[in-house]
Length: 142
Image 1 (cartoon, rainbow, N blue to C red):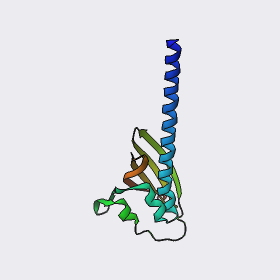
Image 2: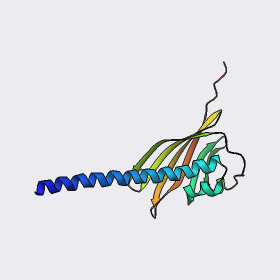
Image 3: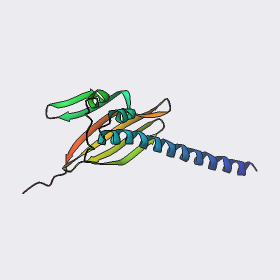
């Protein structure tokens, strides 16, 4: 009897853990889609739903290392036609209330590879840090 109870408890625990993880996965996808679709549609109100207010963005330019507040960086977004790019969530890794994701935003000649760090804050997944790389997809002419 005790053995059956322990087996049932163990099975239920695994089921609950998997379902909770899937739920967090879906919530993270939703957050990442706010970022990707907001950017693609030049819709700052949608994009900002993805970020914590103190989120940072760190990147390298020809001048060197840069660090800015992500929302301040994107606040200059101008409304206009949808951006010609394909968005893809390449990877999501979750560990408790922390997660990271790799996104690929493919434009006609290059791809932004974004690495997002997210935290579950008050039950909501928010991007707290973004780093990225601009990869050239153009074929080199010989």
